[in-house]
Length: 311
Image (cartoon, rainbow, N blue to C red; front, top):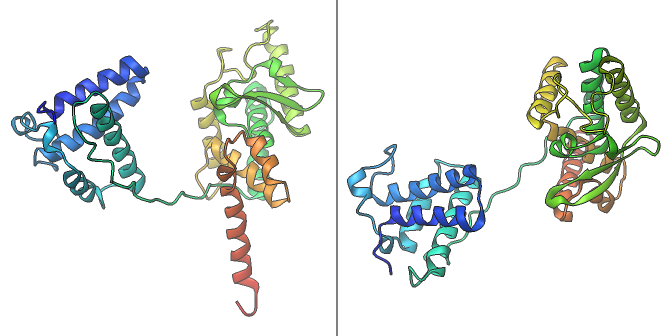
């Protein structure tokens, strides 16, 4: 095995990720934080902010074995959520796979270590009554009011991701047939229907935009614009959703993704086919869509437990 310093190997690994895989600065920072935490643990000062620099500089790659990694995961248990521990282990696995690939080690110490199991949280969604209350809380007056109403109506009517909504151009909307063309994950395009309420809200917004600004984007451009007539960002859309959710006193925190969850849950509650909902949401795997059936079943069980005389 290599007698190279662990901290130096981590630096080389991150340089490789940047050069060979083009990872973003944000992703590289996350990898560095996770791997340096392991290095600090190996230096024997895990509760320090950055460990003892002299001890850290003495830790070699060949000192890290499966027993040490298991002990490290045990140290993380209770201090981190299972999802966080799983993410850290994934970074460590990638690191040692890299070392093995370039023959810097003779065996991968993470090979026999299992990822901790963690249950997926059920999606947050609104009831139909709360959903309607949210939409009706948006004043349909003024340019921004009409824009906000059109945005939320479209989110709930189509179930698109907020990134897909922000990416919509005027030419992507077929007002006559009630359809929108969406560019989803992996640049995969799909056609999604939207209801009459959403179509009417979009038409009202664009009509007032034309009246107030003339024709700011003669070639079409972004469907939803900010006050400077630039494309509205996902962050701005999330702020709008949060503001109106708070204004109408919803009992659960709400993000644009919560409207997508509500869309799927309400369709399945009304008897929609699971495969059809999968297509509408743009999910690659049916198991991802099946999370929403769990929501419906849980609610049915709650009703049963409350109402059945021999529960």
